[in-house]
Image (cartoon, rainbow, N blue to C red; front, top):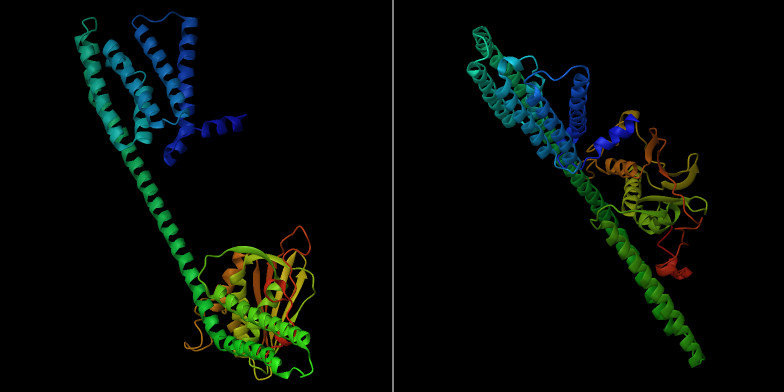
Length: 475
């Protein structure tokens, strides 16, 4: 029951964040005030008649209760401050008429309305409203004291008591006002400092994200530079294939008829086209990899992505390094930024190349583990690392290379990319025993088991003939 009432109170459409937090309590207070005053008067009137001269108080209380309920309606419509001003104004008007009619001495027995007026104006409307209400209350007290003095029915002792109580009454409410003012000022200053700190944190987060994007792009450009010579070599190989197909027209037997020449020419043109498409694929892959784009997570098959990346990986290693890609043919779908995936594989491969001796071995193995995780293990037989180095390899700007050879950002960027995809990365190494990086990524459930899986093909799924896919010497 209480949860439903609390939920209803919190649904008031108040735009200001602070007012929205105050709205539930104020609605509850106004409802209590609007219901309790009439019930209280009904209880008293049921046991005894209204005292002489208190009819005006009854009327004012009923009017104030009605305005309190009207204020609740205004809050429910989003006019929070207007509702509070209306209620505070009703309290001040009621106090003014009551003090004018009954005098200050008669009103000293009930100061709840005075304190309530000060507290609400200070908590909700602010310092200016607090001191304005305090000044108006001084006027109300003055009206009450004047009414006591001008009341010929009161005794001289009554008037002296009224005047004697005036300074202490004013001083008491002055102290209450000062205490409220200092407390509220401290709260609002703390709130302002918290808001400023929150804005600073937001700006810092935006700046950190921008810096992270720049680091990722810098790593892409570094990897693209490493690939430049290898891509040039690969293009030279593609041109050799094209020239080979073109030269076939000179090797045709003389006794081949026109139909045979046309068939051979068609076969040669098809081989030229497929080789050219392979060159286009490499160009597009390199351009899309080095482009500075915002991260775009997508679902793709890890095995297919690594097979597409295989020509670029071969270019990173010298000819005497053996490279192997292992794993079953089942699809291994993950959700990650594809360019970021390529970046982390190329970075780890580049580090392995720098750490391996002549005739080294680099292996990538795809596997599945418990908990629907796809693991990618990248192993080399390089010089390995000591435990002290392993403990710091993911720290930004930490590197065992010289400043000209590395920035120390590669593995830090890789860790952030993997964690952003919901995965984890670990390293296993020992001096002289090589290094293995294991990347674990969450497997994505797909509607069909073959979703995202494509054969190792050229552009548009066209299988390359043997002459076109034959790469440079074994690496």
